[in-house]
Length: 268
Image 1: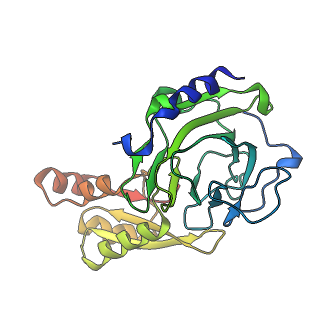
Image 2: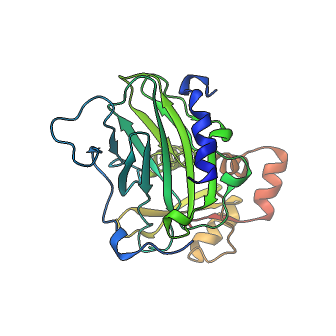
Image 3: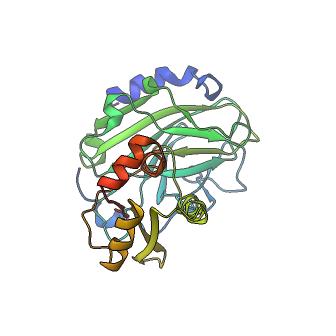
């Protein structure tokens, strides 16, 4: 047994309430997300019982393409690749229900494409449940990222978890999810403020026909010149709402910055 899994087995005593590579082979082709998929032991017949986990990733920002039952306590999880980029497999976000109280499991995310990960440096997956909707991190001592000979020498992230409430649905994610809908609501709110130093334009559409926005933040005069020039200005990607708000600020420093610089925020 892999040493990481031995360490994970010892971590089973910690329950949720205490929480405050290589390409995938042809037989691992994943077409879409699992949808209310009940994982049953091999050879089992009959209706699912409590403890036969039901996985789902058919929701916005969800990603889980396949689940393999290894033992009663262990499951292999396969990430669905990024759209138009089958070599990139990092993000996961899924729910689990139909659990038993005090049920202990090890989840192995077995097809990561990255050889290096922040999981090696203390980062841990996020978890929340219907009765505890605030995201929490799983204790880092329950999480292992390692090179696994049992999975074609892929890098595997394994974490131990103990379900403590039978009626809850649990959700696990790579890190804090930020959905497209939340982004659009945020941009709509900015646009309604009618700021003369802020401009929102349609840059194009994604493969799924979702709009891609170009934001320009600068002084009113520069903003007008920018629009007349067709938006062809030096650009700098900004990744978060807080940094956008800082650039939009009317403070003395923010005002000087917007007069001297043109910030173009675009999808990446």
